[in-house]
Length: 284
Image 1 (spheres, rainbow, N blue to C red):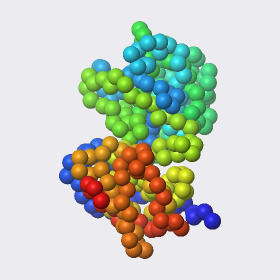
Image 2 (tube, rainbow, N blue to C red; image 1 turned 90 degrees about the horizontal axis):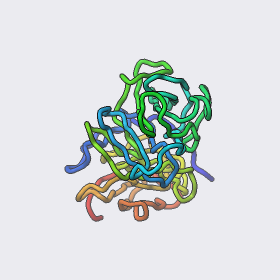
Image 3 (tube, rainbow, N blue to C red; image 1 turned 180 degrees about the vertical axis):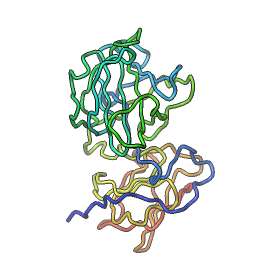
């Protein structure tokens, strides 16, 4: 019998991030950002840069060999909040992802409502447009922004831009370039059901297939209301000396979990356990 997934908001308890840990790690209670993925099909390779528009990103296919007309997907689930033409951004789509989080997609090739219209629900696999050069753009590329609106409402502008993250990794900083980034905008399935665990975090799931997230944490003590869960995955970048996690159960005993897409997956003891605390550490 499947255990119920606890959907309560997660408020992490105290606990210091180990020395050497990434300063980009944030507490779940302070960051409601969805786990955004690159707005392109799974497995494709892209070049990102912030030249002259940090924290916004310009995106072209890796090596910039023929980006025009390539598909643009929603980078997280949400609802289309606006489709419009602007002299600067050209054909533009905005998506509301909830909790004040939005994404904006500029210079799309076709009319702004060619693929989606305001009010349409989208998933990460939804086609919302194609890369183009409309508006104030002299070359085919996607200008992409993540935005956060703290005052409510359903429309954002460039004053609401924040540094972008994909798969939990931040891509920001003046005049920077990332020449080869792989899209993890993949349809959920048995082979990649763990993809929503942000980089540098520990995720626990109620389902043995890695679905039904009930707790995420980047510190030693997870939320006390995480409840029962069976599976684990850490999809983050290992920190020197801290690429393992010791999980302690309220029912007694513990289990060592290793970093990595292979070593980091696995079922906790059958029947589920209540995680009491975790400890980032070296070998265990």
